[in-house]
Figure 1 (cartoon, one colour):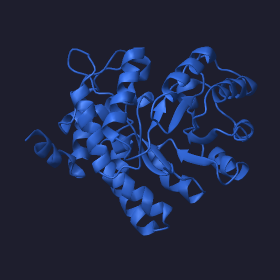
Figure 2 (cartoon, one colour):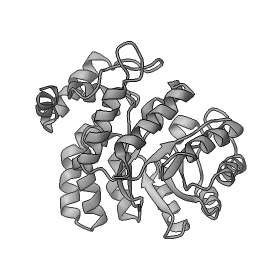
Figure 3 (spheres, helix red, strand yellow):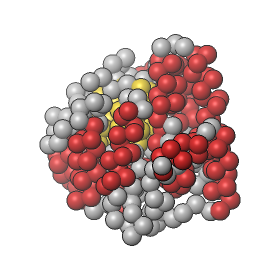
Length: 300
């Protein structure tokens, strides 16, 4: 399957007691697929992966595989700031029926560009599955510079990047430097359209957890050069996208999903419920785009 379009960085639903909510996860994955999402990304940062045990991490991926049943590609998250651990995790997920593996820069260590190159090269050499690198310096403290990414792109199974540097200049440079067959995905919902206009192939989205059909339609419109439709949808959902990042992801998006009746509003520390004023703002923007009308249908 071709990796392109809008992919959801899935939240991980928990029960009130903090246990993995498998029923809610199954329901969420099925809704995403039937809503027309292009691919799914379980166990990224949005999935609160740092707080999952290894058994839970693999269980989330296995449930996603089971429910998807080959209908859309799956990009499974496997990251660590310990290269040996990242290699071991990548091998475990590569043995499963997934299409691509998402792996982020080592966090906290703040490796040099050479250190990042060797980290990703070691992971790539350990498996035969395609890899999507995840550049999110705001979370990891380490930026994958365009020149380093260009070196990494020469490794056969490093095929894509989720670019969340926050710099359109850097993303433009990446798209200029890398070969046309290297896949560049926006890692920020708000800049999906500019990234596609420069040659990107889609978005790994947080917001599509709550509006999968709409953001898939927007992304496809942009990829098909139907910019009028793409801009109309972007303008409608931009206030929601902005509100989903008032506090640290995934706290706001889980709050909205709970308002919609799709999950319990439950987190694992250090994630906590959003502040009351944030919840009020989220409720307003969710109502404005009709999400809370859907909640009654979900609950019925």
